[in-house]
Structures are given as C-alpha cells and as structure tokens.
Length: 327
Image (tube, rainbow, N blue to C red; front, side, top):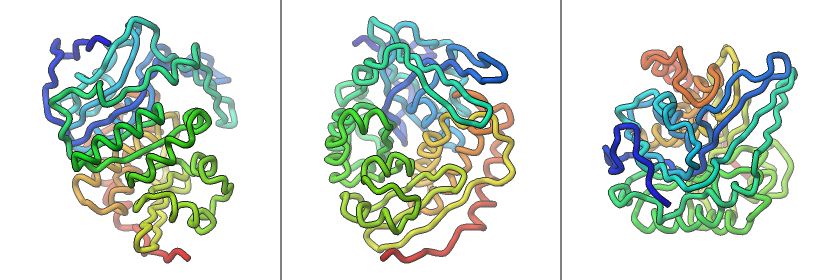
C-alpha cells in the first residue's frame, strides 16, 4: 500500500506522538428519520473519533489507518481540535473503496449502520507493517476497533517495546474472531470496551459490575474501563479489587452520539499521560465524549474551548466517587 501525502504535503511524520491511535476509518453519511440526510461523505470511524477525543487535550497524536482513494482527505483538518498536535501521516491508501458507513437514526434515538461493502471490515485493518518508523517508540498506543489478529500483533509489538497499550473492540470483530481478542487480553492492555461488547465477550448479560467481575478478573487485564453510556464508566482495578463509577458531564444538548465511546478512549489516554490515575483519566474521557455528543460528525465541535474542557474536567473531578470493593 502506498502512503498518502498528509495535509502538509509530506509523507514523513511532522511530530513524534505521545499517543498513537491505530484502527479503522470510514466515510460516513448520517441520516435522521425526521430530516433525511444531514451529513454526507465526512471522515469517521473509530480511529478518527478516538484521535478527535484525544485532541480535546494538549497531547501530540499520530493516526494510523487504511483508506481508499475516495477518502475525503480535504476534510481531515476538520477532525481535530488541535491541528498542530495531530499528525495524519499514518494514513495509508490502497487502490479500492474506503469503508463507507451509512447511519440511520430513528426518532427514539435508535440507530442502524449499513455498509456499502461490509467485507472491507476485515480487509482495511492496519498492522505493525503500517506503523511509520518514526512512530515505533511511542509511550502510549490506543488500538481502536479493527481486525483482532492485527490488534493482537500490535499489542505484542508495542508492549514488547515498553509502550502502554489500550484496547477497544466492536461487535462485528467479536463475531468474526473472538479468540484473537481473548488472546490479546492475556497480554494485559488497558481494556476499554462498551458494556454491550463486554456482554458479548463474557457471555454474562448483566449491567451489574459485580456480576461481570468473575470474567473481568480472569480475562488477563489489570485495568478495565467499561463504558456504560449515560450511566458513565466503570473503572475496575483488577489487582486491588476496586471499582469506581465515574459519571458523565451533566446537562448536555445531545446532537449525535456517534463516536462518543471512541472519543472517551482518546480522552482517557490523554488523561493517563497527564495523571497516570485511571479514575481521573476516566473524567478526561467523559469530557471528550461530552463535546462529541453535542456536535455532528467527526469534526471539531463548534463550541469547543479549552476553558470549557477544563471547567468540565474540574466539575467531574470534584464529584469522583470513593472506591467500592469487588467480591
């Protein structure tokens, strides 16, 4: 695959990231039942939303993903709050179509995704061979949903180099190759799934963290952060058998929840770089998600301001819960 020139006209990276985001990218169309098509051919996908969530905070971020020649590169500058700290030099192109996702939202908030070619989900998956040489010694790596075998390979590679790796998963990848995901967890990444995906992996369909604890405590990870939508996120310290439920930013004007979980992951990793405290980091993640749900698509929220992000983070930090004890 040939490296696509980045937005600055160079194929070489412009910075050494503090956080590397690796995963899939999509072209998104967003449709609403009452309005019809409201956004067309905008950058999207797990890696793009994760990087956008990280860019709420002052962290140098590099993105590695695979797209087609039809990808809207000219819109990539919209998908970050900090263009000077976001490097798209890891975008790889191949001579074929990009993943094209069409989201349909019902009046009740339910949504459905349809793919132009769903088979591309198992093809456009970046691996170790796609990492620019200058980015192979980064301190933090977030593996956004992508091919499980590639995630396993990347976790082995970066963990072996001493990087801190986080992992997120997606429904179709769990269905496609659950075993590689389970093998990946044995390498002890920070695991940041949604609770729905944790249900799929564990076979335990319960929203109570104590019910999920026997599986979490034996899956191989030391730290799990379980995204629970409007309830917040559970931070689970496996070694010390502790749990915290970190809430969400209140009183938001919801526009589009697409990408909120990915943005949480990016914000969490930025927070972890700053604090090395997983509970505080979850507050950073919640703030990142709060901006994404108040805007449409993977682009800089129009109302984003650094002072507002700081105010929201301080608000959540003041409300952090005491630790609960797991059985």
